[in-house]
Image 1: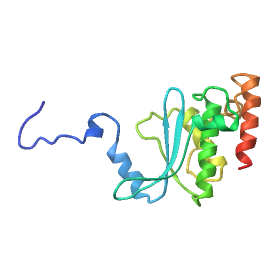
Image 2: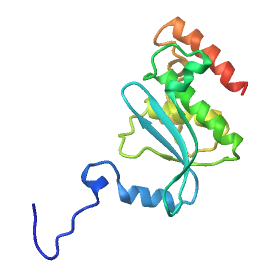
Image 3: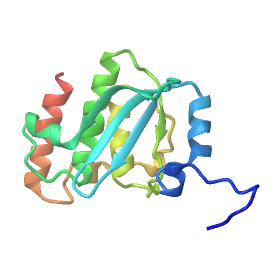
Image 4: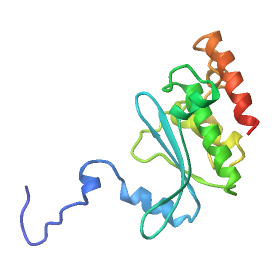
Length: 166
């Protein structure tokens, strides 16, 4: 470990590779709510957060595990589940009066047409304006689950109908 009078130990979350403080500061300077999308192997979390000096204030959230309440029985780590999770979080945020936001992917590597952008498409379809490029959003047949199986596609249509009725 380096020693000396001028050595500065980085913040713990930076040392662990969990937070990019330069990117975070740029997002916070925008003064808009952030759409925070985090993925795991089996699911996805979508949150709407505002900056507060004492810590971020989460205003709306949704996780893929909540989709079972709407009849989702397929796995939670695929594109249709990510889209539905984004749609659910977007509906909750729109009900709270959030109309615009910026996307915060954190330290996740943004793969075009991936799960992170499927969740973004769900948020946008719920009525929250988030600036993005049309090239990064997955194709419609992949969002609906037709590339997986016809059963997932029909299940997707049922759950999406219930979410849009909210």
